[in-house]
Each structure stands twice: as C-alpha cells, then as structure tokens.
Image (cartoon, rainbow, N blue to C red; front, side):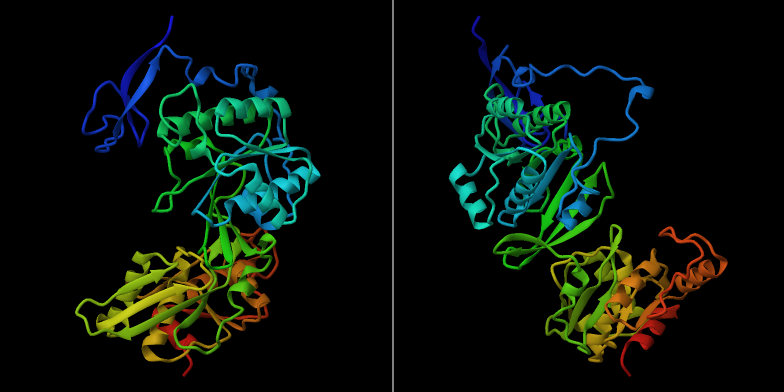
Amino acid sequence: MASRAKTQYICSECGGAQMKWMGRCPECGDWNTLEERRVQEGGPGLRHSGVASLEAPTPLSLPEIPDEPSRRVVLADPELNRVLGGGIVPGAGILVGGDPGIGKSTLLIQTAAEVASRVGRVLYVSAEESAFQIGQRATRLGLKEERLLVLADTILEQILEQVERIRPSLVIVDSIQAIHSSAGGGAAGTVSQVRDCAALLLRQARQLNIPLFLVGHVTKEGSIAGPRVLEHMVDAVLQLEGERFHAYRLLRSVKNRFGSTNEVGVFEMTERGMAPVVNPSELFLAERLPNAAGSAIAVPLEGSRPLLVEVQALASATPFSQPRRTGNGVDFNRLLLVTAVLSKRLNLSLGAQDIFVNVIGGMRVGEPAVDLAIAAAIASSYRNVPIAAEVVLLGEVSLSGELRSVSQLSQRLREAAKLGFKRAVVPRHALRRERERAAGGEESADGRNGVPELPDEIEAVGARTLVEALDAALVT
C-alpha cells in the first residue's frame, strides 16, 4: 500500500514534531520555531536506512569489557595530538566547527592524507565541494596520497554504503549540515535531518570501529549550528578560531571524552596548509615593543599548557558622557570588574576615559589569573608609565584590591623563565605556599616530589594588594 503524505510542524530548534501549528514549541519553549513539513505516513524512516547490514550490539558483562581502549592513531602534528588528547581514537566521533574560510577543510584534508599514508585508506566525503575542487586544494597543499579517496555526495544512504564497502581507516564528512536522507522529511540542514544523519553515521562508525570527523557550520554567535543534541552525541567537539585575515589559528577542545578539555593548539596558515606552532609563547611575543606604556605579559594556563601572551591597554580621554569599554580576547565582565577596582582602590579617574584592552595574536583568555596583567596594562597606559620589560604578572584581583592565588604557579614561572623573563609579580600567599611545599618535600601539582618548585632563573616577587603589585611592576 502506498504511503500517504501528512502535515507535521517541526521545531527548528529542538526537532520536536507537533500535529498543529503553535506559537510556542511545547518541548523547548521557543517562540515561532514550528515549520510546516510534508512527511510520508508509514514510510521507511531514517532508522531503517543504510545500516541494516550491521550486526546489532550485544550486552557485555563488566569482566568482558576490555581494560584498555583501542589503540590511538598518533599523528605527526603535535598540536592536533594535544587537542585530541594524544591521537585519534578508533570509533570516536569528532565534531569540528569554525567560521567559514577559517581552515577547517584544509586542516582535515592534511590529517586525512597523513592517516592514509601511515595507516590505510581514508574516505573524505565532500558534500559542499566537487571532487575537482578537493583535488585542486590537495594539489596546492602538495598532497598526492593514492589511498585518500574523495566522495562528492550528499545522500546519506549512498555514503553509508560506500563506508560499508571500503571499510576505511578514517571517515571525514564535510559538512554534516549538507547531508540529507531520502527517507526523511525536510531539507538538508533542518534539525531532524542533521540529528538523524549524524546519529546513523556515528552508529556505523562505532560498530565498524572507524574514527569519524564531522564538520559543522557555526551560527553568527560562533556556536555549532543545528540541534544542541549534536554536541552531546559526539565524543569530542573542536572549535577552530581566528581571524580570516590573520595567519594564526587556535584549535580549542570544548569537549573530549578521551582527554583533557580546554586544550588549545596553535597553527599558522601558510601556502602549504596549516603548520603547527611548536612554541606559541615565543610567537605571541615576537613583535613586542619593550618598555611600551600599556603593555603587560600574562601567563594563562590553557589546559595543561602555560602560554605567555601580551595584554595591551589604552586609556584615552573621551569627550562623551558615556566612556567606552572594549575588550578583545578578554572577558568583558572581568574587564569591567578590574576597571572598577582601579577606580575605587587606586583612585584612578577612569570615569572619563575610554578603555580598550586587546590580547595580541588572537588569543582569548578568560582565566582570572590574567586580572593583574589587565589592571597593570590599564594603569600603565593611564599614567603613561611603562611596565618593566622583564616582568610577567600573575594573579586574580578581588573586589577589595587583594591578589588571590593562582594554580600551577611553578609551571607558569618555568615557562616565563624559558623565554628570558627575570621577574614575576605574583600573589604573596601563592608564593609562600609553593615555598613551603618545596621545603617540606610535598608532592606538587605536576607530580614532582622533593624537587624545588620555583625556578632559580626568575625572581618571584610576592604582593598582597594591587597597589603593591603595581609598585613592583611599573618603572619608576
């Protein structure tokens, strides 16, 4: 019997289906998100398509579960390895997001070529570009790997069939929003299509033990487009950030079931593709002008890695009644907090000043340990007095003007000492605690035991308040 078409109203945010139109979706609560769809009643449905040949999984008792996961595919790219937690886990689903033109496809095709040369065949599914365009990009990047197979297709069932036939070592789908199933209702990119297509691709990847990379579009706010459940379905979510007209890109690990979150990898976009930056701290400080007013060096911790970044500030008198507060790369609320503390505790007349704060290199730092560097940069620009060139600043600024402790102090100072910095202004309590731990032979946060924590190459100056810290940092 032929199936009949019926009308449903699908929510564009959560994918919930309703029999009649409503102003507000009863499942997610959003307004004006229900869209009319014509679906086939009694049709096959997505759940029956493409993966019928796979065996159904069977329950396992705890003793039957292997003690160790499948062996990772360790890449030659150290930055991508760091963000992934040590390499690609077989059977894992990884979602990669980023602005258009930021370099997602370039990074993934380089990764695909490396896996193809070292492990086995790789299937690169291009749903937005033709095979000719992918070939042109590969030629430009100098990639000629024969085991890298390109499939230009947008139909889910055909993609699943090719994966089942080829059994590749890696599958890359670029992008998931462009894939659609002929068995489902709605156009490609709708909530139901994205959710169901991703679910079937992930199910096949896990049953065949094949790692799967999904490229996702982003909204104008920078979040992954489509249903929020997509980020819950995958094992890792990577976000590629940066300015299209700048050479440097940051790859952040937003979610990772097989490694540490909040890791960051630094890449440089070159004519030969995305090149990893081994020492990003040195890169961010390469063009720094020493003894410039309004410039301070902070040491934020990105995952397990300390990075040295330059924080610049400009305080300029404004003729308007409402001064501007602009922060690029820093949390805006932290900027307002630090500005208020400077006005109240140091009696700086910032109410008539436009304040601009920028983190050089496109980095985004939200750690409270950068508060002291932001405050010192603003005070330096306002007083037109430079900060000593060999000084780094670490500490969280409280509302009372006190400096609060930061984690991994010794690890941050070792990174600063490697780049030639001679002094560090840090919270006094954190400095005393590190010295007591080293004297008592306690185990440190990084696993050392009985080894002096603080490096001898850098002088750590303890400060209790913001006033003491600025006196120690500013050139007099």
